Each structure stands twice: as structure tokens, then as C-alpha cells.
Length: 231
Figure 1 (cartoon, rainbow, N blue to C red):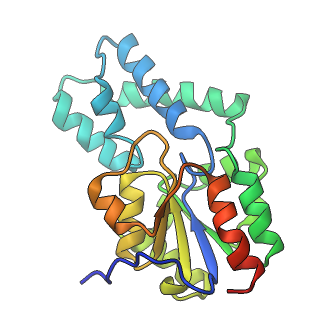
Figure 2 (cartoon, rainbow, N blue to C red):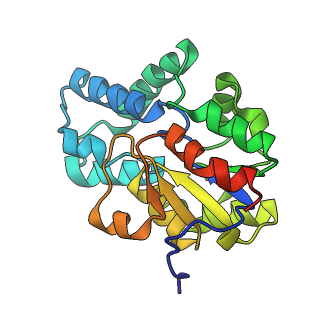
Figure 3 (tube, one colour):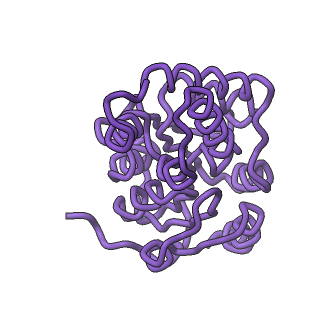
């Protein structure tokens, strides 16, 4: 049975676990655009609702989802090969950070708060994107899709990140942008802050989250007094 969903921030905060895509990096919008362009070029234009349903979901589930929606005639392998090429070209050109990302990470690093990453992106791609963005050195622990049997929305990624940090999940804060990611962190018993990107929070997530904030800068402001005051 999943632990109860914490709706208050721990005091003190002993670690912060971040999602990557859509939370720290502006990759979700780039992914959506790559999917939309590729589908159109293949003659299978996708509704925005279908594109948004893929946000925060690992590749295996996205493949199953498209198979269910579009049927056996949809050129799945070609779609992902072509969209991956578009996405990697954008990564090579430089993916911007979400507003306030580096400011928040630097603040936590100065305060001596351990940080981990829990992402649905596989290794080594997650590490490569972080390195290219100049963020890799901030993280003590990185948990990727390659490290878990059950990815988000299952709690395993967040539980593994907390375990590798050596911190009780109840003493951590998770930072997420997607519905699947929030469900994963909340199910792990971690106080979760949602900073929405492409998807607004549902009523369920409003009730489950410790906070819903418009930006990472707002989260930094929220944590400032707590972290500097030592809890």
C-alpha cells in the first residue's frame, strides 16, 4: 500500500529530488513540437490532446499509447526515429533552462542541501543533457529510466533516489511538472511541489501536492527562509 500523500513541506528539508524534462529543461515543448512535425510529415497529424497525453511518460508507454490510438498501420518505428532526430538536433542547438532553474540549484548547493534527479529519460541521455545544460555537477544522485523496473507514475524512481541519497522520503521535497511525475513522487511519500509546464494541475493533484507554484524562482523564494534558517 502506498504511503499517505504529504501536503506539507518537511522541516527541515534534508534533500530535494528534481524531475528533468519540463522541470529543469525546456525539453517537453521541444518533444511535443518534434512529435507534431514528424506526425504531420508522415501523413498522420496528431491532435493536441494526444500530444499532451504523452508528456512525462516514458518511451515504452508512449509507444503502447500510440499503438492503441492509431492502430497497427501507424509507422511507429519511423515516427520515433524521425522525431528523435528532430529532438536531438534541437538539443545540439541548445535547450534553454526553465526560468529560475539555475538560481534554485545554486541556492540549494550553497545551503548544502543534497540534490538528486529522478527522470524518465534513459541513461546516458539524461546525463548528457544535464552536462550540456551545465547542471550535471549539482546532483549527488541521478536515477534514470535505465535504473528502474517500474518508471513514473510508479514511486520506484523517487524511492530509489531517496535511498541512494540516504535520506528518508518524508524528509525530501520533489519538484515536478507532469501529472505522472507528481503521482510518482506523492506515492513515494515525498512532499511534492508542482511547477506546471505544458499541463495544468488536475483537482486531484492540487489536493495531493504540498505546493503548486508558477516558477522555480517562486520555489527558491519559498525555500529561502527555511533553508537559510536551518529549518
